[in-house]
Figure 1 (cartoon, rainbow, N blue to C red):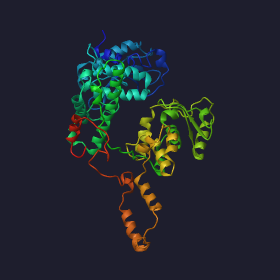
Figure 2: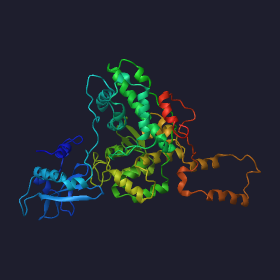
Figure 3: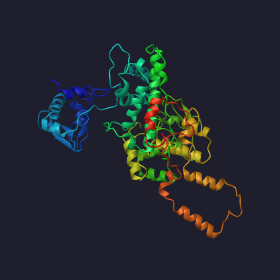
Length: 498
C-alpha cells in the first residue's frame, strides 16, 4: 500500500518525482561513473533516494533525510546491481525509502517534507456556483499560460499564490470593494517577500520597516493591482462580472522610483572575470560586450555572428522581437574567436556540462561575485545594467541604448538604466562648468590642498551610494496615483511620509 508521503511525492510539481528519477533500471545505473559519493534524486524537500556506485564491487540504493540541524541522515536500502548479492528493483528501493522516512525517530528529527519544483497552477481549486476572485484568477491564468511569456506567467502565478490566494480568493467578485483592498495592503506590508523556494517567513510589524522596505512593499502592491486589473477585465470580457464597481477601486499607490545603482566599474569587471571559471567567463564577457540576457546568449548560434553586419543577431526572446546588436571591435573579436572550431548551427556558449546556458549559471555566478568581493546583491542581470550604464555614461543616446537592449522605447532606459553613478555626475559637473569668477577660480596650492582634503574624506569603496538623498518618504515629487481612502489609511499609519 502506498504511503501518504509517497503519494505526495508522486503529485509533486509538473511531474511525478518518483517516476522522474534518471537511474531506475540496471542499464541506467551501469552507465553511472564510479565515484566516492552517491548520485542523488530529490523526491520531496529533505527526502532523497540515490545510488552509491563506488567501484565494480559496491553499488547500493541509499536514502537520506535532511535533519532540522541542517545535516543529513543516510541509510543503505539494498544492492542496486547484481554484484556480490542479488539486487532489488527501484520500486522496492522506493518502498523501503518511504518506509524509513516515516520511522518515528527519523521523522521526528527531519525537516517537514514539502513539494519540489516550480508552481504550475493556482494553489486552490475554486468550486461552487458563486463566481469568486479565485475563479477569476484561475480563468485568467488559463489564458495567460497561452498568451504571455513563460517568465511573465510564472511571476504572476507566484504573486497570486503568495499574496492574493490567502487574502481575497474567496470573495465573490461582484462584492469586491476597497475594504478588501485595504486588507490586501495590510497583508503585503506584514508579509516578508518570499524568494525562490524558501518557506514563508513570519509576519512583521509594518512600523518596524525601513523606508526602502516600505518602498518595495508598495511596488509589490502595485504589481498585485496590475494583476487584479487584468483578472477583473478578463472576467468582465468573459461575462462573469456585470458591474464596473469592483473594477473601479483597483488603483495603484504613489511610490518614487529608485534606480538600480549596482553596476560595475571596468576594474571590478576585470576582477569578476578573473574569478569566473572558463565556461562562466565566456558568458560573462559576452554579456558585458553585448548587454544581452543569459537566455539570449544561450540561444546564440555560430551563424548569428556577423551575419547581418558588425554584431550579432539575437532571436526573439520574452515575447520581444528579434534584433541586431552592434558590437565594438573588441567585442566582435571576442565573438569571432568563440566561433572557432564550431559549425554554423552549433551553440556559441555551453556550460561546464556542455549544456545550453539557462538558469544553471546562478550558483556559479554568485560564487564568482563572492570571490571577487563585489556586493552580494549583484546578479547576472547586473552585467546588462553595467553595459547600459557604461554606454550612457560615455554619451550614448538613450534611443541607441534602448535599441541595443531590445526595449520598445526609451522609457525603461530612462527609469532603469539612464542614471549615472554619482562619481560620474561629479566629474561631468567639474568638466562642463565654465569659469564664472576669477576670485573663486583659485588654483593656488593652498586652495588645491583644501579641495583635496575634502575628497580624501570620501570612502572610495562607497561610491555607489555617494550623493544619494536620504529621505523617510516613498512618495514621488508629484504623486499621480489616486488610491482609495481605505488603502491610503494603511500607508498613512506608517512612520514617515508614505
